[in-house]
Length: 183
Image (cartoon, rainbow, N blue to C red; front, side, top):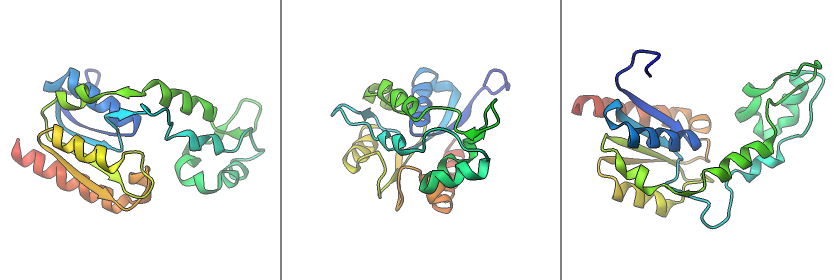
């Protein structure tokens, strides 16, 4: 934000990015005018589970062409095709190992309620109702504990912005318009 000369801005994050966004808002409340949290939990993995373990089913290795690797992604293609790139040896694949995502997820496990409730800017919590990582009970508690928070539930999975783009865009657009009007 400093590099761009932004004194304050609305922040939007998905999953770990949402946790990063609300942690930034907790530490720099004057710099965040509104917060959109898409599927970012306030407590995560305390039961030992890893909601991103599904990425271990991504295809291993590389392929001779971009198209061949994207085909191998199957149902993951909409989420990971943009990340497929050419490696130095001329093969195509992901720029990371799926285990890296699982490891990153495990490092963010814990109780983040104090960060979630620290900032007072308007907030929108977006939850996927069909396979998202944010449980219904936790979403309700996040809204209850943080005044000024609205909940938008979309009939999709964790990738709310990709699998329900129109509903996600409408929820965010409506929220940001009301937050700007209230400011």
